[in-house]
Length: 258
Ligand SMILES: [Zn+2]
Image (cartoon, rainbow, N blue to C red):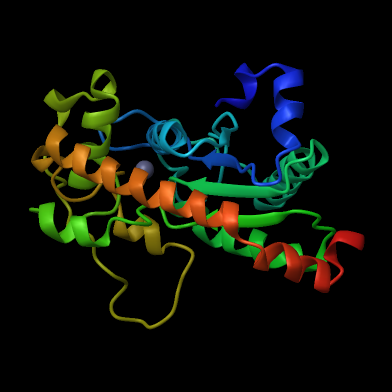
């Protein structure tokens, strides 16, 4: 169920069920190699969320394409939203979902650059009025570890690579420009073994706006990746519907009354 396609009365009816879950998909606008569209992350995670909602009913908000892409601004097409704005925006969206009567919110993320920010968003709910239970699938390939080992043929994966391109070949083949694909010239290199993070880690890792060899991507690999994610998401939504721990802890801490 898409939030924007429901009538006000139908939405109000759904809000009276106390196991309703609202899913917020978040992606990005940034270069995805020479062959994938800027909105790859949002397009992918949105379609996966819609597929999951057909198996386990839940309400899906329109995907949030605007997000945190500070380390991809050197390429055309990046729209970066400042971190303070984005945190406030997410807070605002969650408050409005809650004001409409939905007390279980799941953010599903398709973009690696959002992970730190989403972790901070979760943690900072402890200092804000939070009259809802928040769940976040922060890692873009949250359920794929096993299937990745089975299907990958390339060493370097992580962005517009064999794996991400396979997702898109299965979900949005009409948007893939596979005739433009060449293996990335540069090998990703970590910063000379220094055990510290730096502001340019990703820029150094991904100098061409993609990594590895997307030529190894196939629609069949994409099908397995998508099915794995959808199954994981369905299971997660079911567990969230049953969960009482988050809501009870929020009340115990008095966060709903801050
Ligand atoms: Zn991506």
